[in-house]
Structure formats: structure tokens, C-alpha cells
Amino acid sequence: MVSSQQLAQLDRLERQVTTLVAAYQQVREELADALVTIEHLRADGREREKQLREYQNQENIVKLVQTIAGGEPTQANELKQRLNEYIRELDKCLAYLRE
Image 1: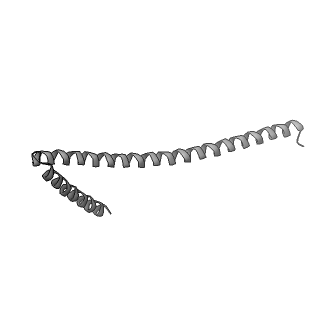
Image 2: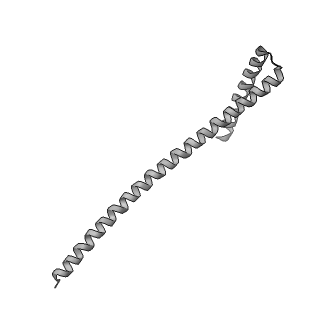
Image 3: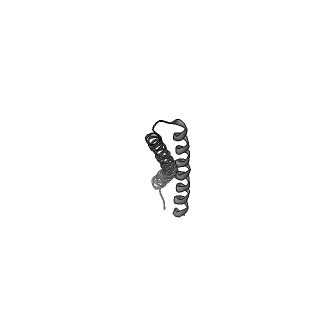
């Protein structure tokens, strides 16, 4: 026969298990949220790196154009536009090759 002390002990164990299960589920949800946040941050980092490379390319183009054109604004703008077009085409080709 089961004593009242054993029933009380089983009741305490049941409450502890219920508390542990609830805590476990909460930690799992927090982990899932953290993983989503990490993935968003990684994607954001990749996007920022891409933007940085684009800005660096633009800066290099401007320097190159200024060096080649020797200070004439009209020639410099035309050269810059052509170089930008070439770079866009190269980027498209590279993106196509990656697929």
C-alpha cells in the first residue's frame, strides 16, 4: 500500500519534472530565436561586406579615372561610366557562373 509520504514525494517529483520540462522548452525557444538572430546578423554582415567591396571598387575607379583623364571632367565622367558598365557586366557574368 502507498503511504501518504510516498504520495507527497511523488507529487513533489511530478511538479519538479513539470518545471524542468517547461524550463527546457523555454530554453529551446530561446535557442531557436538566437539561431534566427545569428542568421540575420550573418546575412547583414555579408550584405555590408558586399557594399564595402562595391564602395572600394567605386573609389578605385574614381582614382583610376582621375589618373587617366588628367583632370578633364568630361573625359573623366565618360571613362567612369564606361568602367562602371564594364564592372556591372562582369558582376553579372560572375553571378551567372556561380549558379
